[in-house]
Length: 178
Image (cartoon, rainbow, N blue to C red; front, side):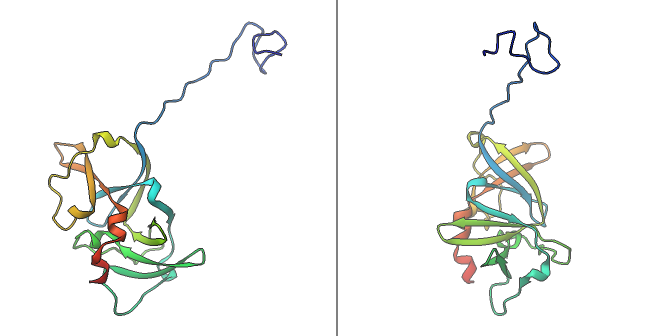
């Protein structure tokens, strides 16, 4: 039986009616996760380096004494203990993450066998972004520069940018030892 034969009919369609198929757009670029840190700056991470996105309650994190102030503590992620860091403060923000709330959005990034949880203020969602339109970072703070791959200009008048982070450089940073 072929589609054009009179024996092949879809429910609700007459013999002479052919169903219309909608063509889906092919996404351009690469898939990224968009999110905000407490200062209001928006960032993106490439989806390929993200292991998981979690929203645990703060009481599931265990604070560890005598470690960097950037580290909020440890978290059990499916039987594996990972460090959780305040990404905003790591990037130089003065505003610490508010941990006095029901859930904390955490992006677990991975490189080789190392996993780190990056605590953020708010997750926007996944979006296809064209990496060909990425600009070099013009006005990013010096402390943030080593961890940026570039930025997309969202609104030039409002000076609104979306900065793309390099999770491998964040994971391998010497700042964790400070």
